[in-house]
Length: 269
Image 1 (cartoon, one colour):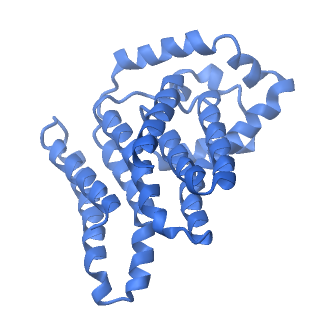
Image 2: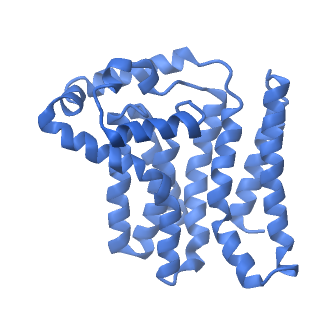
C-alpha cells in the first residue's frame, strides 16, 4: 500500500470511528460511514486491480486516486458539524478586524482597485484545478515517480484542517459579514459563490484546506521543477489573498495554513 493510500485509509477510518464517539444524528453517522466505505473500497480495490488490469494502468490510476479521495474526506468532515463554535469564530473575526480594517475595504470597494479583486477571484477559482494540474506537470516532466512526495505534502498538510473543522466548526466570513462580502462583484465572483454554495460543506476550514492543498503541491513542484514551481507558488499566494479578500476564509486560516504547509514540506522534501 502506498503512503498516500495509507493516509487516506487512516483518515476515512478515523472519521468513521469518531462519528460513534460524538453526539451525531443517525443520518450523519450513516453518511460518514457511507463515504468512508466508498473511499476504503476504492483503496482496497487498487491493491488487487493489477491482477485484472494492466499493472501500468493501475499504477497511473493509483497516482491520481488521492485527487478523488481528498474531497471525500472533506465531505466526511463536513458531516460532523451540527453547531457552530461561536467563541472560536468570534476570535477569528476580531483578528480580521485588527489586521484588515485599514486596507481591505479599499481594495474590495474602490473602482480603481477593482481589477485586483477580479484577479484574486480568478486566482481563487483556480484552486480547484491547481492540485491535479500540478500532478499533471510532474507527469509531463517525466517525474511521476515523485507523485509520492506530492501527495504526502498535500495530504499531511490538509487533513489536519479537515479534522479541526469537524470538531470546531465555524462559518466562513462571507456568510457572517454580508456587507463586506458583497463589495466584491462580477461574473467570476458569482461563479465562485455558486461553487461554494453547491459543492462545499458550507463551513470554514481552519486552517484553510485550499491553501494547504495548493501550496503543498506547489512547494513540491518548486523543489523538483523550480521555474514551474515558482509560477505555481505565485498562483497559490493569489489563492490565499483571494480567500481573504473574497471572505472565503479568515486571515488566520490562510496564515496558519501556509505555515503548516511549509513545515510539512520541510520535513518531507
